[in-house]
Length: 152
Ligand SMILES: [Zn+2]
Ligand SMILES: [Zn+2]
Image (cartoon, rainbow, N blue to C red):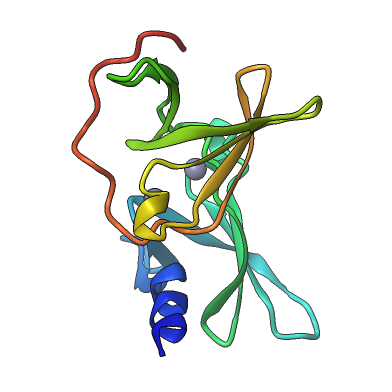
């Protein structure tokens, strides 16, 4: 079924590896997550944090049976900026992915991946220019690097 194929595309497969010090890490796209101490709860969930946590990055994920079950994939070290498309529409760029404005509400601005027509279901919410959350996974690699930021 088509739906099942899409579902698979939706979920990135975490690549397990180990750091130079021999600690377990997860590679997810261009991000690296390290295992957070030995904290596992009864449900056998394993918590991971971005390896740039020392720089204030709060991205994290939880795995269960080696599958990602929860993820907060907003990285402080991401390149986030706003630009304008050729058609004059506002666009949000997060880490090379561009998002098109979908809706503005009183609590957040809603963006969806500019490739939503390709069934990419990644979305983002911003408030006052700051990323509140990025949800969903892109079913495609980031487009070619965009032009330099106009506005940070
Ligand atoms: Zn990070
Ligand atoms: Zn996308």
